[in-house]
Length: 204
Image 1 (spheres, rainbow, N blue to C red):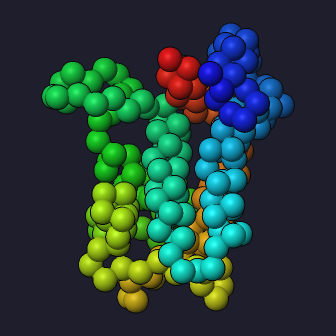
Image 2 (spheres, rainbow, N blue to C red):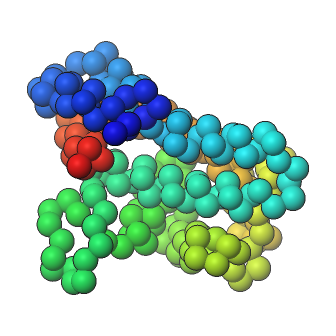
């Protein structure tokens, strides 16, 4: 099974023991590049760019934002080292498991830069219910929200007054977060442990 466009489960298993004990910056930058970036780029960023580059701003924003919303949950669950599992009762969840996407999604918007400078709990909930859930469940935005290509500045992401989300600005912000995450990962042992938990789960 491939974890990225070029790395397989066996490749992760081959470096896992080192990952548990080696906290060297260069080692973890390679882990980030080979596994995290390799997965994100092949599974999310390249498909988004393919849609965007061949689009005409006539509806492809729905597909792009749907992928971006899926990416947000993966980014946050990787940061925390949490694994999604469908259960009948919350009491069935084990440590580091979760069953509700909302908490994970809101946590990302409220806690991770540059998003935490824009989203408080109320605004994060509005994004989740009117944009994320509308698109993923009914292929539409809710409550008057619209998807636009990009703002004049390229850094606005979302405008609550006019109810616009800018898909290209959101893409730039997600890339900024991932660069920041790389710098945190190579310096934080707890984030490295969380990363290992997540990729162990992806290999199951």
